[in-house]
Length: 279
Length: 102
Image (cartoon, rainbow over all chains, first blue to last red):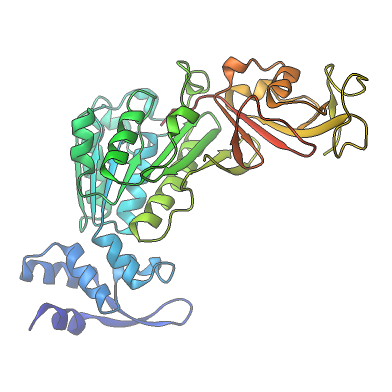
């Protein structure tokens, strides 16, 4: 029996909460078929989606994502540079949503001051590499997608390597030193960049398409960024990472980005959101 | 928009031309948000600030006592702006410092 017939044979009938009848491929069946056909589970899930059969793992992604969009997510690659406060939460969201391949990097190790906000930071992981925690977390949530995480601070060449083949680059770096380098690498490679930054209760997200505005001419500049005085807190960084992940997922699913050439500023001290054009 | 802060360099100056939309008072009223480390410069009376009709963003910052060197990003009415951008009645201005935490 060929794989598409085998997927259909192992699918079960189910009903979405709104009453929509669907066919579902349970995760255990997808894993068994993947073993039998020597394929990644994510490809079996994508093939199921091609036939309008929904993988059980992603059932609650529907119908916000169509089967075709979910398949596109599973066949897409995202580059994620930075696995701290922003990157840990972005990774969590991309892995749960079903982005098939995530290429991540962070050369840092956890320190005690990360524990207030960074999803991947755990008391038992202090002084351990963030990349190691990322791999463990991703495997624990969703072993059916492919995540690589380099424990390295990337130079321009390393960033180009990380971005190769990616449909989106997520800037989850901290500080100003490396962000412009990543922005240049993404622009040179023709890859959309979704950036975010936070300080205290304030954060922003912006998307730059190739040929877009020089982001760091507008957002950079100070040698003494606000987080030096205000720190970074869990709610603010999680909001910024959620917005960043939502925008990255739009691009990965083949939808137009909402923040291309724009800046979305979220402030949790006055609970305001503001979107402004950067062009 | 209540309790517009009337700042010293503002309104009622006979040498200023009459601004549009300010009831012929020669002043404009704008709303301002000073975020993150700039929150200390938010007017105590709220977000509304009256300025001379010829005011630019730099005049707003000066009226707030906000040094230009502390400002990295300026947004006005949903677009990026500069210190030289002229202000009109009803404008909404946001001042941001550099944020780069992750």
